[in-house]
Image (tube, rainbow, N blue to C red; front, side, top):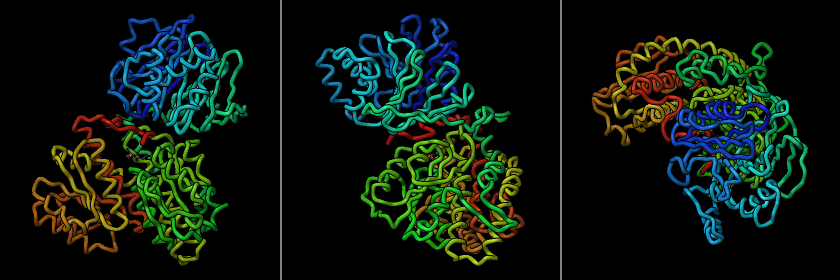
Length: 613
Ligand code: M6R
């Protein structure tokens, strides 16, 4: 969703801000803008469209100054146009502000401000906020940081903001509530951004602003952080564990393809130091202090959205199957609003790649309020969910830039596999020989993912055969049912082909009506336990002239006779099948999207981290 980048220092701000906005493009946006401060003048350039459009449009304007704020906007209030694009300025053209989030009481405030004579150019809630700060500054003669602080105590909603004042140069004021902000501390210079990606090439020293904090960075007085109640906070500087190469395509045509190909490494990274086959142990540092409570939980509730929710469904199969603890998987957006029965006997696992998804964050808050232990499975280090949960584990996949989640999914499933094994061992519900066999098999998954990737050319060929279809059905059973859902989501989001995932046996209860010669049916048919049943499901599709693309285990001779196309994956233990069977589906969606000329890394209407409800 929206992205913020700001700079204060001694270098030209424009190139730093443009590059920073490009780094934030992956979050999804529809307009971009920059405000620069130079010799007590404020210059605002903003434009509907891409950052490149903004850079081109700026060629005829001065872009001097070593202080500025930039923004990529994902429209919520008001259409994506030049006027609603950020930064927004105050009526007196003294203040410029960028904002992520939603100001919920903006309509009331707007009315009150209009009565005071404020005139608004666009429809955004953000413009109301900057006028409100202006009003307080004017009325009370407060310095910028005080006007911002008081304004924020009177608004409801979520925000990350950065503001600058033409009459108070050399200073940026930033604040956050439920929307992330990171401050990079350089040599006599500061960077502020929604995440670390625009900062890492300048400095690795960062401060994660906490909820309800306001930071003032100043070339005169350095950095000060206060709470909304004006209490001074001592900032903690973290060292970023991120390399600039991770933010580049590294020779691949798209980030998504790069991230698909990274999976042998990222899955291995997720297991590193957590599993030892020779000595027969598996451990998750984040679980150590809470192991007894989690192992004795009355039930585990997994809360997540989108792809992370699909990983959660696989977690349900894994934890129930191996550790024998009841698990429920909830859409975070539903859990938060339906007065769920949650208490201290429950453990809630929140799964999120970004660690910033608003609904998942709200579910975490709710679970904490009800006394449940909350465990986070998160990719982005230092993100809000990582910090709000009682304990948790990072999946260590590195930055995921493609909007369609791929390596984070396999990282989440790997982590859940480790967790299921830890819990199974602790509860003594798995025979030692089975435990050791599963450990060995899990350790071999990265190599097997590499083998699946070798089918890329064949999968590209199959993509060519179905690229012009308008619908697709994905079927799977057991551990592969969530994979079917994930395959369908991947196809929908990047190729805009309508697709649905179903448990294979459910097909005859309705979706079978859709099957004819125009319907590709992608069947994940690697299950050992329900093999005959899935063969019957394939026969049902073929009897109705559907085109079957089956993902099968190497050496399968039965399904290859029935299906139009088969893609082979190496054999593995059934609980780990999703880590292999999802790979061909990721590649299939990728190639179809490329063939349909879609914007693979930044699909229309989508945001990488959904920080609004
Ligand atoms: O960052 P999160 O894992 O919390 O994000 C959840 C979903 O928004 C995300 O998985 C979304 O469904 C992806 N676009 C899927 O590819």
